[in-house]
Length: 90
Picture 1 (cartoon, rainbow, N blue to C red):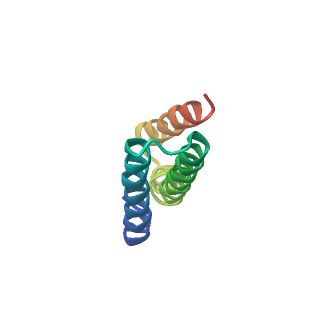
Picture 2: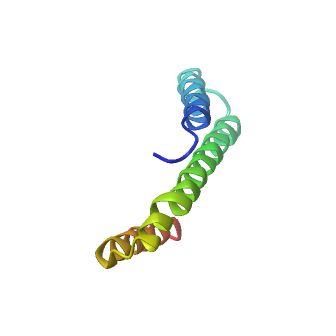
Picture 3: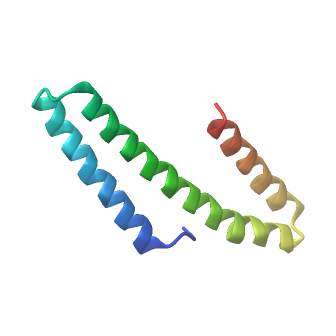
């Protein structure tokens, strides 16, 4: 992985803590809107992590493939990004 490993782990651990908090909220039968707000916060962090990972991928793996002259590798990297963009836009 080319993204900042320590920052990515820190953010993922934050989400883990939020998910553990969400489980407790559901077990404690907390107010739906409070749960929803916490869910959206967790989703926001996950989206941010994904953006960081994809940014690093484009700047390193995809850039290297485009510079390499290897047509097969270029095509694979482009196909991967198209599939990810398709998933993100659903």
